[in-house]
Amino acid sequence: MKEIKGKFLEAFKSGNLLDLSDPEQVKAFFHCMDKYSEIIAEFKGRERVLDVGCAGGIMLTLLSLLGHDCYGVDFVDCKTQYPFAFEKHGIEFSICNIEVDNLPFPDNFFDAVSCGQCLEHFTHSPKHAMSEFRRVLKPGGLVEIDLPNVACFRNRSRLIRGKNITWDFESAYLDAKAISYNSMSFFPLRHNREYTLHELEILLERSEFVSIKTRFMKSRRLRRGLGNFLSVGSALRDLVPSFRKSIIGLGLK
Image 1 (cartoon, helix red, strand yellow):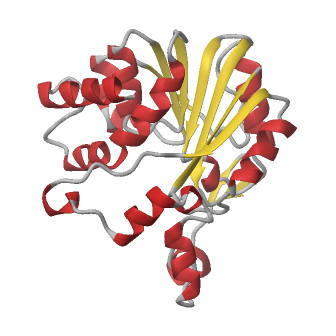
Image 2: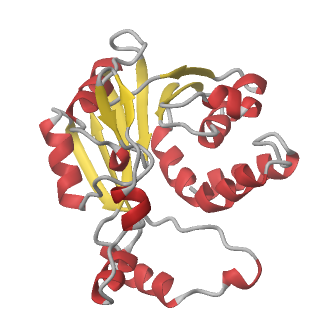
């Protein structure tokens, strides 16, 4: 993982990873680099990789630079919004609502499928998406799912203080506007359901993956300047794994 983080920083500084003039992408890099490095370490030896919910394509770009054959899908047109990753690095992109659509790929096509910080946005059951991940994986292929940890320190502290764990009640729920797709309503811009580690394990088991492994992710946001000083929350997350912000599950087809 340390080697991958070094390659991430090298690609960032050289300007090969993302558009450095885009503050949103630069912020995303510092927010997610550690997490992406932990995920990419799982893909060693797996050539063709699909990233579901790929957004700006930062993780896919590094995977491409590392020699992987990369594909991305998302609910919105990320290729137009983030041309740097998809056009410069030749990453194939497709628009797909994985809650209800079939992935636009044949059976047994990928060596690995990654779905990061995505399922919590689902309005409906993730069973269809999980079935599609399994379908497009080669026998022995790896699925990687990472999600916010509903039992993290931040959420526990908010509940103790009488606050809800996520999103503003009025704007995200009372006044939320549904997106209509195939005669169904979706609310993809908010977290509709976060998961515990045990629930992620159940999801992988019910989706017929084997050799399942789940854990609390070690990664944290890359901090700059005064941010390098650990907060109380960060220190507690190091001591108590269940306080960490994200969980990850791995399974084989």
